[in-house]
Image (cartoon, rainbow, N blue to C red):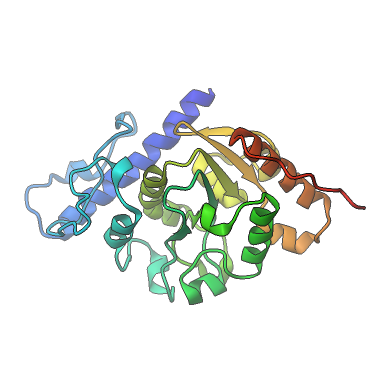
Length: 264
Protein backbone atom coordinates (compact mmCIF):
# COMPACT_ATOMS: atom_id res chain seq x y z
CA UNK A 1 0.00 0.00 0.00
CA UNK A 2 2.89 2.36 0.78
CA UNK A 3 4.42 1.89 -2.69
CA UNK A 4 1.08 2.57 -4.36
CA UNK A 5 0.60 5.71 -2.28
CA UNK A 6 4.05 7.00 -3.23
CA UNK A 7 3.45 6.28 -6.89
CA UNK A 8 0.12 8.13 -6.69
CA UNK A 9 1.86 11.11 -5.04
CA UNK A 10 4.45 11.35 -7.79
CA UNK A 11 1.86 10.89 -10.52
CA UNK A 12 -0.32 13.63 -9.02
CA UNK A 13 2.56 16.08 -9.13
CA UNK A 14 3.40 15.06 -12.70
CA UNK A 15 -0.26 15.48 -13.73
CA UNK A 16 -0.21 18.99 -12.24
CA UNK A 17 3.03 19.77 -14.10
CA UNK A 18 1.65 18.47 -17.41
CA UNK A 19 -1.59 20.40 -16.95
CA UNK A 20 0.33 23.62 -16.19
CA UNK A 21 2.48 23.00 -19.28
CA UNK A 22 -0.54 22.67 -21.54
CA UNK A 23 -2.15 25.72 -19.98
CA UNK A 24 1.02 27.76 -20.54
CA UNK A 25 1.09 26.68 -24.20
CA UNK A 26 -2.56 27.49 -24.73
CA UNK A 27 -2.31 30.88 -23.00
CA UNK A 28 0.73 31.67 -25.18
CA UNK A 29 -1.40 31.35 -28.31
CA UNK A 30 -0.08 28.04 -29.60
CA UNK A 31 -2.60 26.48 -31.98
CA UNK A 32 -3.48 22.84 -32.30
CA UNK A 33 -3.84 21.77 -28.65
CA UNK A 34 -6.97 19.64 -28.41
CA UNK A 35 -9.23 20.63 -25.52
CA UNK A 36 -9.39 17.03 -24.32
CA UNK A 37 -5.64 17.08 -23.61
CA UNK A 38 -6.29 19.58 -20.85
CA UNK A 39 -8.08 16.79 -18.93
CA UNK A 40 -5.40 14.34 -17.83
CA UNK A 41 -7.01 10.99 -16.98
CA UNK A 42 -6.07 9.60 -13.58
CA UNK A 43 -5.24 6.23 -15.12
CA UNK A 44 -2.39 7.63 -17.20
CA UNK A 45 1.05 6.84 -15.76
CA UNK A 46 3.55 9.66 -16.29
CA UNK A 47 7.23 8.59 -16.14
CA UNK A 48 9.27 9.96 -13.25
CA UNK A 49 11.73 11.51 -15.69
CA UNK A 50 9.08 13.36 -17.69
CA UNK A 51 10.55 16.40 -19.41
CA UNK A 52 10.23 19.70 -17.55
CA UNK A 53 7.96 22.35 -19.01
CA UNK A 54 9.18 25.70 -20.28
CA UNK A 55 7.31 28.83 -21.35
CA UNK A 56 6.85 29.07 -25.10
CA UNK A 57 9.40 31.37 -26.71
CA UNK A 58 11.56 31.75 -23.61
CA UNK A 59 15.27 31.15 -24.09
CA UNK A 60 17.22 29.42 -21.35
CA UNK A 61 20.09 31.71 -20.46
CA UNK A 62 21.51 29.11 -18.06
CA UNK A 63 21.90 26.47 -20.81
CA UNK A 64 19.50 24.06 -19.08
CA UNK A 65 17.13 23.76 -22.05
CA UNK A 66 16.41 20.15 -23.05
CA UNK A 67 18.10 18.79 -19.94
CA UNK A 68 16.25 16.41 -17.60
CA UNK A 69 14.43 18.04 -14.68
CA UNK A 70 17.06 16.62 -12.32
CA UNK A 71 19.70 18.80 -14.05
CA UNK A 72 17.75 22.08 -14.00
CA UNK A 73 19.41 24.81 -11.98
CA UNK A 74 17.45 26.47 -9.21
CA UNK A 75 18.14 29.80 -10.92
CA UNK A 76 16.41 28.59 -14.06
CA UNK A 77 13.42 27.19 -12.18
CA UNK A 78 13.03 30.54 -10.41
CA UNK A 79 13.21 32.34 -13.77
CA UNK A 80 10.63 29.92 -15.18
CA UNK A 81 8.33 30.65 -12.22
CA UNK A 82 8.48 34.33 -13.11
CA UNK A 83 5.92 36.77 -11.70
CA UNK A 84 3.67 33.82 -10.95
CA UNK A 85 -0.10 34.31 -11.16
CA UNK A 86 -0.96 30.62 -11.47
CA UNK A 87 -3.25 30.77 -8.43
CA UNK A 88 -5.10 33.45 -6.47
CA UNK A 89 -2.21 33.97 -4.02
CA UNK A 90 -0.31 35.86 -6.71
CA UNK A 91 -2.75 38.76 -6.44
CA UNK A 92 -2.27 39.29 -2.69
CA UNK A 93 1.44 38.68 -2.10
CA UNK A 94 4.13 41.32 -1.77
CA UNK A 95 7.08 39.09 -2.69
CA UNK A 96 7.34 35.61 -4.11
CA UNK A 97 9.36 33.41 -1.74
CA UNK A 98 11.19 30.78 -3.78
CA UNK A 99 13.80 29.23 -1.48
CA UNK A 100 17.29 29.72 -0.14
CA UNK A 101 20.39 27.82 0.87
CA UNK A 102 22.79 25.32 -0.61
CA UNK A 103 21.66 24.30 -4.12
CA UNK A 104 23.30 20.90 -3.59
CA UNK A 105 22.30 20.41 0.04
CA UNK A 106 22.11 16.92 1.50
CA UNK A 107 19.17 18.07 3.64
CA UNK A 108 16.10 20.09 2.59
CA UNK A 109 13.51 21.62 4.93
CA UNK A 110 10.06 22.19 3.42
CA UNK A 111 7.49 24.39 5.17
CA UNK A 112 3.89 25.11 4.24
CA UNK A 113 4.11 28.71 3.02
CA UNK A 114 5.53 32.18 3.70
CA UNK A 115 4.35 34.32 6.61
CA UNK A 116 4.27 38.10 6.92
CA UNK A 117 8.04 38.52 7.45
CA UNK A 118 8.85 36.17 4.59
CA UNK A 119 6.38 37.97 2.32
CA UNK A 120 8.02 41.29 3.17
CA UNK A 121 11.61 40.09 2.65
CA UNK A 122 11.20 37.45 -0.06
CA UNK A 123 13.12 34.84 1.97
CA UNK A 124 11.80 31.68 3.66
CA UNK A 125 11.77 31.32 7.45
CA UNK A 126 13.10 34.75 8.46
CA UNK A 127 10.49 35.58 11.13
CA UNK A 128 10.05 34.17 14.63
CA UNK A 129 9.47 30.64 13.31
CA UNK A 130 12.63 31.07 11.25
CA UNK A 131 14.60 31.82 14.41
CA UNK A 132 13.37 28.54 15.89
CA UNK A 133 14.35 26.70 12.71
CA UNK A 134 17.80 28.32 12.89
CA UNK A 135 18.12 26.99 16.45
CA UNK A 136 17.18 23.50 15.29
CA UNK A 137 19.76 23.65 12.49
CA UNK A 138 22.41 24.95 14.90
CA UNK A 139 21.54 22.21 17.41
CA UNK A 140 22.28 19.71 14.64
CA UNK A 141 25.70 21.41 14.37
CA UNK A 142 24.88 22.54 10.85
CA UNK A 143 24.67 26.00 9.35
CA UNK A 144 21.73 27.49 7.51
CA UNK A 145 23.88 27.76 4.38
CA UNK A 146 24.50 23.99 4.56
CA UNK A 147 20.84 23.15 3.97
CA UNK A 148 18.14 24.22 1.51
CA UNK A 149 14.88 25.75 2.73
CA UNK A 150 11.66 26.22 0.76
CA UNK A 151 7.88 25.98 1.07
CA UNK A 152 5.05 24.05 -0.54
CA UNK A 153 3.55 27.33 -1.82
CA UNK A 154 5.67 30.31 -2.79
CA UNK A 155 3.24 33.09 -1.86
CA UNK A 156 1.78 34.03 1.50
CA UNK A 157 -1.78 32.82 2.10
CA UNK A 158 -3.92 35.64 3.57
CA UNK A 159 -3.86 35.76 7.40
CA UNK A 160 -1.32 32.92 7.29
CA UNK A 161 -4.07 30.36 6.71
CA UNK A 162 -3.06 26.88 5.47
CA UNK A 163 -2.67 26.72 1.68
CA UNK A 164 -5.75 25.48 -0.16
CA UNK A 165 -5.68 22.47 -2.46
CA UNK A 166 -5.78 24.47 -5.71
CA UNK A 167 -2.86 26.59 -4.47
CA UNK A 168 -0.84 23.50 -3.58
CA UNK A 169 -1.57 21.96 -6.99
CA UNK A 170 -0.46 25.14 -8.79
CA UNK A 171 2.86 25.24 -6.91
CA UNK A 172 3.58 21.49 -6.75
CA UNK A 173 5.36 21.25 -10.12
CA UNK A 174 7.87 23.90 -9.01
CA UNK A 175 8.46 22.27 -5.63
CA UNK A 176 9.02 18.95 -7.39
CA UNK A 177 11.50 20.57 -9.76
CA UNK A 178 13.32 22.24 -6.84
CA UNK A 179 13.72 18.90 -5.10
CA UNK A 180 14.81 17.21 -8.32
CA UNK A 181 17.42 19.94 -8.83
CA UNK A 182 18.84 19.81 -5.30
CA UNK A 183 18.65 16.00 -5.09
CA UNK A 184 18.77 15.90 -1.27
CA UNK A 185 19.49 12.73 0.67
CA UNK A 186 16.79 13.60 3.22
CA UNK A 187 13.73 15.90 3.27
CA UNK A 188 12.24 17.27 6.49
CA UNK A 189 8.58 18.31 6.18
CA UNK A 190 7.81 21.04 8.71
CA UNK A 191 4.26 20.81 9.98
CA UNK A 192 0.95 19.30 8.96
CA UNK A 193 0.39 21.14 5.66
CA UNK A 194 3.85 20.39 4.28
CA UNK A 195 3.79 16.73 5.32
CA UNK A 196 0.28 16.13 4.00
CA UNK A 197 0.99 17.90 0.71
CA UNK A 198 4.21 15.99 0.06
CA UNK A 199 2.85 12.60 1.13
CA UNK A 200 -0.66 13.09 -0.32
CA UNK A 201 -2.35 12.09 2.93
CA UNK A 202 -4.75 13.43 5.54
CA UNK A 203 -2.99 11.71 8.43
CA UNK A 204 -2.18 14.23 11.22
CA UNK A 205 1.42 15.23 11.88
CA UNK A 206 1.34 13.60 15.32
CA UNK A 207 0.99 10.22 13.61
CA UNK A 208 3.25 10.93 10.65
CA UNK A 209 6.29 12.15 12.62
CA UNK A 210 9.02 10.04 14.26
CA UNK A 211 9.47 7.76 11.25
CA UNK A 212 10.70 8.08 7.70
CA UNK A 213 8.36 8.00 4.72
CA UNK A 214 9.26 7.67 1.05
CA UNK A 215 8.98 10.65 -1.28
CA UNK A 216 9.95 9.61 -4.82
CA UNK A 217 12.82 7.55 -3.45
CA UNK A 218 13.96 10.18 -0.92
CA UNK A 219 13.53 9.53 2.83
CA UNK A 220 11.16 12.14 4.25
CA UNK A 221 10.84 12.91 7.97
CA UNK A 222 7.71 14.83 9.01
CA UNK A 223 8.07 16.87 12.20
CA UNK A 224 6.34 19.70 14.02
CA UNK A 225 6.49 23.18 12.49
CA UNK A 226 8.77 25.70 14.27
CA UNK A 227 5.75 27.94 14.90
CA UNK A 228 4.21 25.11 16.93
CA UNK A 229 7.33 25.00 19.08
CA UNK A 230 7.12 28.76 19.44
CA UNK A 231 3.61 28.47 20.82
CA UNK A 232 4.33 25.51 23.09
CA UNK A 233 7.46 26.78 24.84
CA UNK A 234 11.22 26.26 24.63
CA UNK A 235 11.85 23.14 26.72
CA UNK A 236 8.55 21.38 26.03
CA UNK A 237 7.89 17.79 25.09
CA UNK A 238 7.24 18.92 21.52
CA UNK A 239 10.77 20.37 21.30
CA UNK A 240 12.26 17.04 22.32
CA UNK A 241 9.97 15.27 19.86
CA UNK A 242 11.46 17.40 17.09
CA UNK A 243 14.96 16.69 18.39
CA UNK A 244 14.25 12.95 18.31
CA UNK A 245 13.18 13.35 14.67
CA UNK A 246 16.34 15.34 13.85
CA UNK A 247 18.46 12.71 15.59
CA UNK A 248 17.12 10.14 13.13
CA UNK A 249 17.89 12.52 10.25
CA UNK A 250 21.49 12.97 11.42
CA UNK A 251 21.91 9.23 11.83
CA UNK A 252 20.63 8.57 8.32
CA UNK A 253 23.05 11.20 6.97
CA UNK A 254 25.82 9.53 9.00
CA UNK A 255 26.55 12.79 10.80
CA UNK A 256 27.48 13.12 14.50
CA UNK A 257 24.53 13.41 16.87
CA UNK A 258 25.22 16.12 19.47
CA UNK A 259 24.45 15.13 23.05
CA UNK A 260 21.56 17.22 24.38
CA UNK A 261 20.60 17.31 28.05
CA UNK A 262 16.87 17.09 28.69
CA UNK A 263 16.52 19.52 31.55
CA UNK A 264 13.14 19.58 33.22
